[in-house]
Image (cartoon, rainbow, N blue to C red; front, side, top):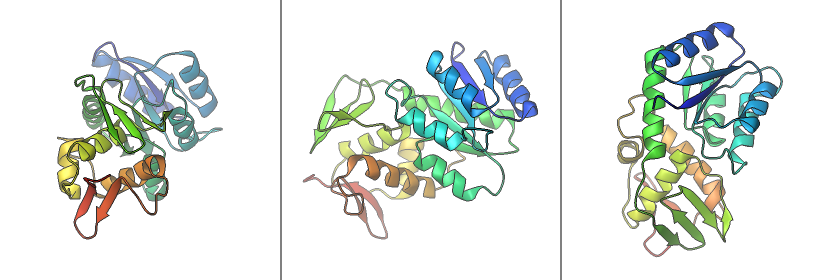
Length: 231
């Protein structure tokens, strides 16, 4: 992981300095940006492997940067951890719905941030056999980590991709939140069970013709989620 290039976007110099110092000490190549415009310019000009993104930025907000990244084929698969101030509960959920892979509440310890970066990278970089799984209008490419619907690419985050693939490969079986957390988020200790619901909701907005009446990822009321064997 030592050659990984990370962009840290936050308007608080103390946080940028703390994160930069600790990640560089671990061997990461870290670049800072202090507002939304600078962050977008850097993201469009340079190639980053990871973005740590504050929600409340001057100018373009973190949420908008996340949305722009997820809608751009060049940046849609870059893992994003969002930073939120205490009490920004609604913003956390919105951040996940916009496609962030994880979020952290300030103040946080550099050690916890490092653990989360490593966990998100493990989730997003695991390679499997070059196979395309097809279901209905969807084609899920396990080598390139991309999903198309009617041959049009979808902007799924790495976590949404793994969640969809896990359910599709086990279609017909119902999984509760804890089972999905164990399978998709693996050993990450910081994720709340409702995070699963947020990712399922965002996934549906992208893959379903009618998210309110899903044809792929369905809900078994009171139990969990599944992909129908007949889908």
